[in-house]
Amino acid sequence: MPVKLLMSWDISPDREQEYFEFVIGEFIPGMQRLGLEPTEAWATIYGEYPQIMVAMMAPDLPDAQRILNSVEWGRLREQLFGFVKNFTHKVIPAKGGFQF
Image 1 (cartoon, rainbow, N blue to C red):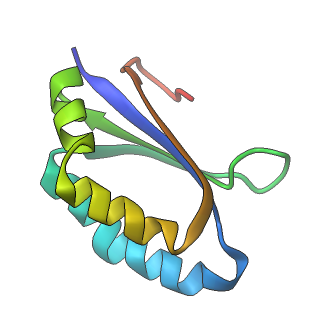
Image 2: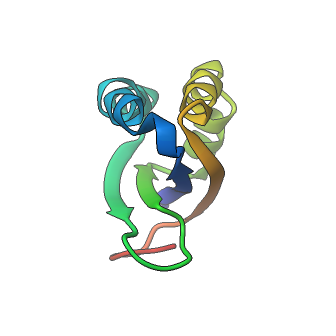
């Protein structure tokens, strides 16, 4: 059964340009190399919610766990932490439409 990796974070105010370059140039391609497919990305423009919400699809829970335990995921996550704050993630069963 497919699962989604849901992530959210806020971009550090002084790192926006570098953040976008990293996400487009390294983070998303790196996640795809690991076997995750981007399905959704949302930006909050008003309210007390995470600024960025991203969903990535994995074929099943064992694959998602393997990816989240990989050295490459750890490297990508640590690099992302240089540009963001308030990072959270969880893995849930995939359903159609927006999930959070």
